[in-house]
Image 1 (tube, rainbow over the protein chains, first blue to last red):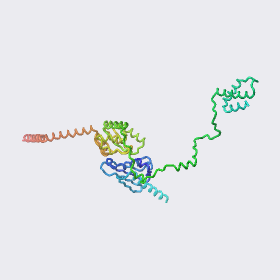
Image 2: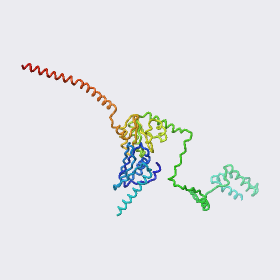
Image 3: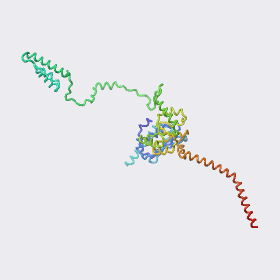
Image 4: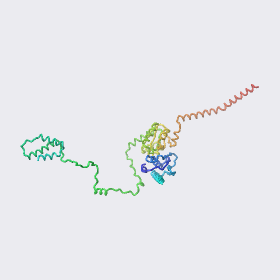
Length: 108
Length: 287
């Protein structure tokens, strides 16, 4: 859990994050770590309007993280064989690039 | 000469001591004209020394700070030569050829033969909790703040649902042996248990609604393993008494129905014959 603490994610450009998981399955660690980190106060306060939906089911379906950005783009991560750190890194890089784009367009 | 020697000795003493020495000297007056000036000087010095010894111990060497800095906490910079040598002789650990992220984490120290008393105590506590509770729900604590967690605790406490937090080793140890093995995959990271001596799924779900971070993962209610959807369905069920009443109702309707069916034909025949008899009676009257 401690490995994913150092990553700074700014959810400014994110509209909603939905996490689907079946907790009785084997490879759940990364998804649950991701959920834990996303829910932490430091990251939540970057955008309080960002919705985080969690769908806990029991149908042996593979875990999935679906991030919907403000400009309509979607990032779907099938998190079965991915670590939480990799997911957070990807999300943070996407977020920072979106923020940069928004800044540039505002300047013009 | 006597004056100077006296002065030298007295110079080191403090002002209060000085006044007392002088007063002592005044009391021990020497007989006049008996001694030469040289001997009188020596005697005076000896007297003063004796008087001082009577009064207090005089340190022969005293450290006096003359207008130096009041702050002595500042560290003095190390000499440049020494600094150089220290820098030269500093140990530099050799860098590993593989990057750290690719290396295997160090194996944790294996359990020593000693039994951990705290762990044993927690195990017994968890066993008690499992035995006494009818409902045992597992939650993921998604970085919920301490104050929110406390509020949730109080809200659940109103319905006799208690939050228990156990270390994961203890949970693995105890649940692995009990019939609740199915719950083991749920325990990962920060989790907590909500236990209750009564099966109050509805109240629990209501209390959790105010803390959206907390995620219900699964539960064991009355020795039955339930997923989240199962718990929601369970909470929608009416109470046990009501269900029993319904069952009694359906059973009694069945018996009354069969009785009805059995007597139906004879009753109908009776009414038919009755009507027929009446009609015949009417016809006879008309004729």
